[in-house]
Length: 228
Image (tube, rainbow, N blue to C red; front, side, top):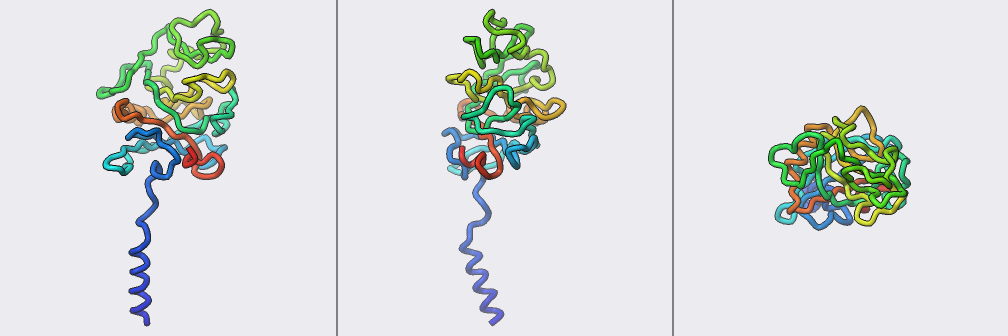
Protein backbone atom coordinates (compact mmCIF):
# COMPACT_ATOMS: atom_id res chain seq x y z
CA UNK A 1 0.00 0.00 0.00
CA UNK A 2 2.87 2.38 0.85
CA UNK A 3 4.45 1.74 -2.56
CA UNK A 4 1.15 2.41 -4.33
CA UNK A 5 0.69 5.75 -2.55
CA UNK A 6 4.21 6.89 -3.43
CA UNK A 7 3.79 5.86 -7.06
CA UNK A 8 0.47 7.66 -7.28
CA UNK A 9 2.00 10.83 -5.82
CA UNK A 10 4.76 10.74 -8.42
CA UNK A 11 2.19 10.43 -11.21
CA UNK A 12 0.17 13.40 -9.91
CA UNK A 13 3.31 15.50 -9.45
CA UNK A 14 4.42 14.77 -13.00
CA UNK A 15 1.14 16.24 -14.29
CA UNK A 16 1.51 19.55 -12.40
CA UNK A 17 3.19 22.59 -14.01
CA UNK A 18 6.78 23.17 -12.93
CA UNK A 19 6.53 26.56 -11.18
CA UNK A 20 4.63 29.68 -12.15
CA UNK A 21 5.08 31.29 -15.56
CA UNK A 22 7.51 34.25 -15.57
CA UNK A 23 5.89 37.54 -14.59
CA UNK A 24 5.62 39.01 -18.13
CA UNK A 25 3.65 35.95 -19.23
CA UNK A 26 1.06 36.79 -16.56
CA UNK A 27 0.59 40.43 -17.55
CA UNK A 28 -2.50 41.54 -19.45
CA UNK A 29 -0.23 43.34 -21.95
CA UNK A 30 3.50 43.78 -22.44
CA UNK A 31 3.45 46.41 -25.19
CA UNK A 32 4.11 44.06 -28.09
CA UNK A 33 7.90 44.17 -27.96
CA UNK A 34 10.49 41.60 -26.98
CA UNK A 35 11.90 43.51 -23.99
CA UNK A 36 10.09 44.55 -20.81
CA UNK A 37 10.90 46.21 -17.49
CA UNK A 38 8.71 45.39 -14.49
CA UNK A 39 8.66 47.64 -11.42
CA UNK A 40 6.79 45.90 -8.61
CA UNK A 41 6.06 47.03 -5.06
CA UNK A 42 4.60 44.79 -2.32
CA UNK A 43 1.61 47.09 -1.64
CA UNK A 44 0.17 50.48 -2.72
CA UNK A 45 1.79 52.29 0.20
CA UNK A 46 5.24 50.79 -0.36
CA UNK A 47 8.19 53.01 -1.19
CA UNK A 48 10.50 50.13 -2.10
CA UNK A 49 10.25 47.09 -4.33
CA UNK A 50 11.98 45.49 -7.26
CA UNK A 51 12.80 46.30 -10.88
CA UNK A 52 13.45 43.42 -13.26
CA UNK A 53 14.24 43.52 -16.97
CA UNK A 54 13.22 40.73 -19.31
CA UNK A 55 13.94 39.39 -22.80
CA UNK A 56 11.50 37.45 -24.96
CA UNK A 57 13.16 34.76 -27.06
CA UNK A 58 11.51 31.95 -29.03
CA UNK A 59 8.14 32.77 -27.48
CA UNK A 60 9.32 32.72 -23.85
CA UNK A 61 10.30 35.43 -21.36
CA UNK A 62 13.66 35.24 -19.60
CA UNK A 63 14.97 37.38 -16.76
CA UNK A 64 17.95 39.48 -17.89
CA UNK A 65 18.57 41.30 -14.60
CA UNK A 66 16.99 42.48 -11.37
CA UNK A 67 17.65 45.06 -8.66
CA UNK A 68 16.06 46.76 -5.67
CA UNK A 69 13.98 49.84 -6.48
CA UNK A 70 12.35 52.86 -4.87
CA UNK A 71 8.98 54.44 -5.59
CA UNK A 72 7.11 57.61 -4.65
CA UNK A 73 7.19 58.87 -1.06
CA UNK A 74 3.44 58.22 -0.88
CA UNK A 75 3.55 54.87 -2.64
CA UNK A 76 1.77 53.95 -5.86
CA UNK A 77 -1.55 55.01 -7.38
CA UNK A 78 -3.61 54.24 -10.47
CA UNK A 79 -1.99 56.08 -13.36
CA UNK A 80 -5.24 56.93 -15.12
CA UNK A 81 -6.50 58.94 -12.15
CA UNK A 82 -3.25 60.19 -10.63
CA UNK A 83 -3.08 63.81 -9.42
CA UNK A 84 0.04 65.92 -9.84
CA UNK A 85 1.98 66.79 -6.70
CA UNK A 86 0.92 63.73 -4.71
CA UNK A 87 4.38 62.11 -4.66
CA UNK A 88 2.89 58.86 -5.97
CA UNK A 89 4.24 56.58 -8.67
CA UNK A 90 1.67 55.93 -11.44
CA UNK A 91 0.84 52.30 -12.12
CA UNK A 92 0.30 51.09 -15.67
CA UNK A 93 2.11 49.99 -18.83
CA UNK A 94 4.20 52.67 -20.52
CA UNK A 95 6.58 53.14 -23.43
CA UNK A 96 10.15 54.34 -22.84
CA UNK A 97 10.57 57.13 -25.42
CA UNK A 98 14.23 58.08 -24.89
CA UNK A 99 17.10 58.25 -22.43
CA UNK A 100 19.02 61.17 -21.00
CA UNK A 101 21.70 62.00 -18.50
CA UNK A 102 24.00 64.54 -16.91
CA UNK A 103 26.93 62.34 -17.93
CA UNK A 104 27.82 60.42 -21.06
CA UNK A 105 25.76 57.35 -21.99
CA UNK A 106 27.23 53.98 -20.98
CA UNK A 107 29.21 52.29 -23.74
CA UNK A 108 26.87 50.16 -25.83
CA UNK A 109 23.75 52.30 -25.30
CA UNK A 110 21.50 52.08 -28.38
CA UNK A 111 18.74 54.36 -27.15
CA UNK A 112 18.53 57.97 -28.26
CA UNK A 113 20.37 59.70 -25.41
CA UNK A 114 20.11 63.42 -24.64
CA UNK A 115 22.84 65.08 -22.62
CA UNK A 116 21.61 67.48 -19.96
CA UNK A 117 22.93 71.04 -20.19
CA UNK A 118 22.45 74.22 -18.18
CA UNK A 119 19.55 75.02 -20.53
CA UNK A 120 17.69 71.71 -19.98
CA UNK A 121 14.37 71.85 -18.12
CA UNK A 122 11.35 69.59 -17.76
CA UNK A 123 8.19 71.71 -17.78
CA UNK A 124 5.55 70.78 -15.20
CA UNK A 125 3.57 74.03 -15.38
CA UNK A 126 -0.11 73.25 -15.99
CA UNK A 127 -0.54 76.60 -17.73
CA UNK A 128 2.21 75.91 -20.26
CA UNK A 129 1.92 74.58 -23.80
CA UNK A 130 5.14 72.67 -23.06
CA UNK A 131 3.61 70.71 -20.16
CA UNK A 132 5.39 67.39 -19.57
CA UNK A 133 8.13 68.09 -22.10
CA UNK A 134 11.89 68.62 -22.13
CA UNK A 135 12.52 72.24 -23.08
CA UNK A 136 15.68 74.18 -23.95
CA UNK A 137 15.62 76.98 -22.90
CA UNK A 138 12.72 77.40 -20.49
CA UNK A 139 9.81 78.99 -22.42
CA UNK A 140 8.17 82.17 -21.19
CA UNK A 141 4.91 80.40 -20.35
CA UNK A 142 6.61 77.83 -18.06
CA UNK A 143 7.40 79.25 -14.63
CA UNK A 144 10.82 78.21 -13.22
CA UNK A 145 9.12 77.19 -9.98
CA UNK A 146 6.92 74.82 -11.97
CA UNK A 147 9.75 73.07 -13.82
CA UNK A 148 12.69 70.82 -13.03
CA UNK A 149 16.12 72.20 -13.88
CA UNK A 150 17.54 68.84 -14.90
CA UNK A 151 21.18 69.72 -14.27
CA UNK A 152 20.33 70.37 -10.60
CA UNK A 153 19.78 66.61 -10.15
CA UNK A 154 23.30 65.58 -11.08
CA UNK A 155 23.20 62.28 -9.18
CA UNK A 156 19.61 61.16 -9.84
CA UNK A 157 19.74 62.10 -13.53
CA UNK A 158 23.23 60.81 -14.20
CA UNK A 159 21.31 58.32 -16.35
CA UNK A 160 17.55 58.07 -16.88
CA UNK A 161 14.85 56.74 -19.16
CA UNK A 162 11.70 58.79 -19.77
CA UNK A 163 8.61 56.82 -18.72
CA UNK A 164 5.79 57.58 -21.14
CA UNK A 165 3.24 58.35 -18.43
CA UNK A 166 0.85 61.15 -19.51
CA UNK A 167 3.21 61.78 -22.39
CA UNK A 168 1.59 61.29 -25.81
CA UNK A 169 -1.50 63.41 -25.03
CA UNK A 170 -0.70 65.10 -21.71
CA UNK A 171 -3.62 65.71 -19.36
CA UNK A 172 -2.78 68.82 -17.38
CA UNK A 173 -2.90 68.17 -13.66
CA UNK A 174 -2.18 64.44 -13.92
CA UNK A 175 1.57 64.66 -13.57
CA UNK A 176 4.79 65.30 -15.46
CA UNK A 177 8.40 64.22 -15.41
CA UNK A 178 8.11 60.54 -14.47
CA UNK A 179 11.40 58.75 -15.10
CA UNK A 180 13.35 55.59 -14.37
CA UNK A 181 16.51 57.06 -12.87
CA UNK A 182 19.35 56.63 -10.40
CA UNK A 183 18.68 56.58 -6.64
CA UNK A 184 18.77 59.78 -4.65
CA UNK A 185 18.72 59.91 -0.86
CA UNK A 186 15.37 58.17 -0.39
CA UNK A 187 11.94 57.68 -1.92
CA UNK A 188 11.11 59.61 -5.10
CA UNK A 189 8.53 62.28 -5.95
CA UNK A 190 6.77 59.75 -8.20
CA UNK A 191 9.52 58.26 -10.34
CA UNK A 192 11.07 54.79 -10.12
CA UNK A 193 14.71 54.74 -9.07
CA UNK A 194 17.42 52.07 -9.03
CA UNK A 195 21.14 51.95 -8.13
CA UNK A 196 23.42 53.62 -10.68
CA UNK A 197 25.08 50.32 -11.58
CA UNK A 198 21.68 48.84 -12.46
CA UNK A 199 20.63 51.92 -14.44
CA UNK A 200 23.76 51.62 -16.53
CA UNK A 201 23.04 47.91 -17.09
CA UNK A 202 19.48 48.69 -18.21
CA UNK A 203 20.71 51.29 -20.73
CA UNK A 204 23.23 48.85 -22.19
CA UNK A 205 20.53 46.17 -22.39
CA UNK A 206 17.62 48.19 -23.81
CA UNK A 207 17.20 48.23 -27.59
CA UNK A 208 14.65 50.57 -29.20
CA UNK A 209 14.34 48.06 -32.05
CA UNK A 210 12.83 45.62 -29.53
CA UNK A 211 10.28 48.19 -28.26
CA UNK A 212 10.77 47.88 -24.51
CA UNK A 213 8.00 49.04 -22.17
CA UNK A 214 7.77 49.35 -18.40
CA UNK A 215 4.95 47.83 -16.33
CA UNK A 216 4.50 49.38 -12.87
CA UNK A 217 2.26 47.93 -10.18
CA UNK A 218 1.94 45.96 -6.98
CA UNK A 219 2.33 42.26 -6.31
CA UNK A 220 -1.46 41.80 -6.13
CA UNK A 221 -4.68 43.67 -5.35
CA UNK A 222 -6.35 46.49 -7.33
CA UNK A 223 -3.00 47.89 -8.49
CA UNK A 224 -1.52 44.49 -9.38
CA UNK A 225 1.06 44.72 -12.15
CA UNK A 226 -0.61 41.76 -13.87
CA UNK A 227 -3.63 44.01 -14.66
CA UNK A 228 -1.61 46.16 -17.04
